[in-house]
Length: 313
Image 1 (cartoon, rainbow, N blue to C red):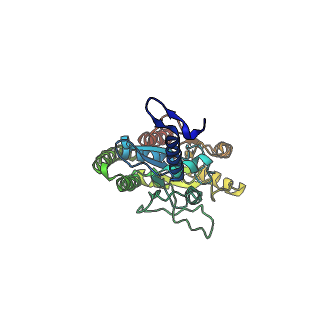
Image 2: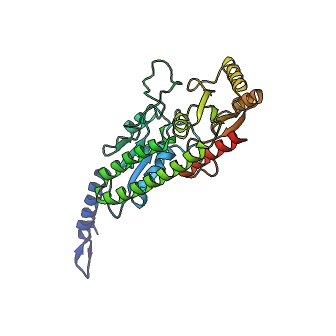
Image 3: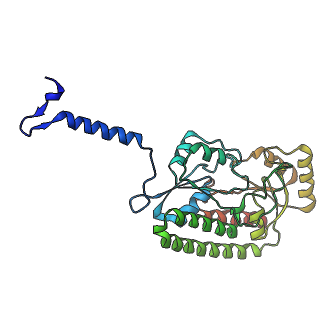
């Protein structure tokens, strides 16, 4: 018996036309490219952040309306990160990409291009921030300022406002929620900043040496004084002559503290501390890399508290 004569006797329905209809439906479905689902109650805004700090800012402003992924965990170098195939897939499905800019994530433009997602909106969170010159960039670099802006809570407020604007642009239905969550987070940032500044103001000596120049915005906001940096140029180890000069500076001026970071070469900073008599304090520029720094507010609290304790000792 051929297919053309197959029927279900009791209902009298021919099978072949049903199979043809099913095949046609599947072929059309496969031919249509994947698109983002409409944003609404059934779907979250998909956000990709270059750094964990931007992930947290997006979660604070977006809360239940967002699904956020950070490309960097915090233990890699944000300057030299190598994107993975999974990063490309994530960007292909995202509504928003959050970056700091200022030449920090030099790898991100190629990633965006290769993701080929026409609906992806890139939010550069450093726009409008008052910049401090970056003395570690090579001559002729186009970088316009030190990119570690988020360590000043005043700059963080600018950054979260940009993120709120981006969320409203792709999900206007929840605009009032985003504005309410933004206002709440800004209040908490204000309170934390005021409390920490009051604590630092009681310090007599606020001078420090930093391993990596991630700290000028933090120092400016809270009143610490950076006397020198171990790293003079990004991607290059310090020379013996520079380390000898720092040793003399620390001894002559009785600088008590050298600030390092978890992802940096600790042998260099420990050697400098051994020669100079200064104490090494490991702080983190990104949340989650040291126990007790799981959020931005706890990161600020941790970094200020560790410095106060070391400078008072």
